[in-house]
Image 1 (cartoon, helix red, strand yellow):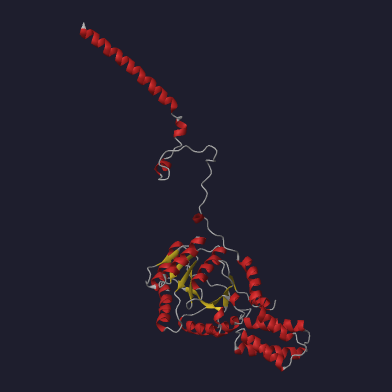
Image 2: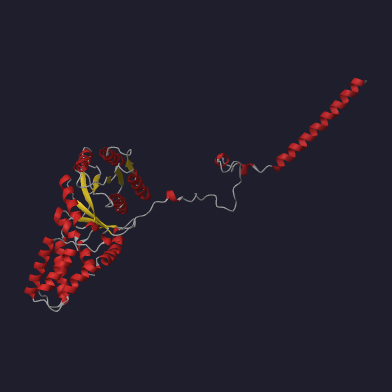
Length: 384
């Protein structure tokens, strides 16, 4: 009897406990969100350290739109050559105003006597035009005005413009030679002394080429300054251009070689190689520059060697140009900081010294403050 009673009590307990558990499970299932909502909880948000717990999406936010691009995803769009030329023309006119005013003031006198012509010579020499070009311009202008009997200042101004333009050289080929041979990229080697703004010029030149829809590879062959390579890489990243660099203190010729190799592999249009600034009086450094060029040309022809000169250095820039021209075959000149001096005549002097044209001018601190040089724009800016 006792055993039978014990079995009955156990059976009743099992039934009661079973019903309670079933009721609890049913209520728990009713509290869970529907399966379609659970499917929207991604593993990415669960594993992300900032979101350790699952979270439901905000129904008020648009789900199908892609996430907004971060600042590192957005590439800058460089200014078009036409736009920057118009802006820089105005800036050039402001910086060279005193030069032009001095010339026009002399020609505006009632009579052009010997003193007036001497003043004209002094104005040209002060602007760093150079002795020989100055004497040539004054002799030509003086003979022309005497032969034509010009006394009207406006006609004298027109004659001055034509003589200045002839000195600057409107027929010189100022195009950047950046097309390689046999499908290989053009290689532009940028050289100059310390402090002229070579690295900045390379970065700006990359922007000019990108604006022309050319593909570019940068070579940071200034291995003496880690900051130079960092700076160049930053310039490249802003417009989506890769930069090839080497270890600090490494062989710059090796970096130039690797940059060209990368350009060939990528099918790039142009490889721009930045070199270390070197004093033109140090023969060892200058010889190293020649080595950089020779090593690069084991893979592709160097199509352009641009010499960067600080326009504010005046006649010292001519000495630099002469020495660099003896070491590497300089094919073009970049004049930087032309807005910081009234000595625009350096354009004429440096072209006469090297026999190669000024191809680009820098006229400010902005990213797009480098523009192709135009002889007529330059002369018109002087006389504006």
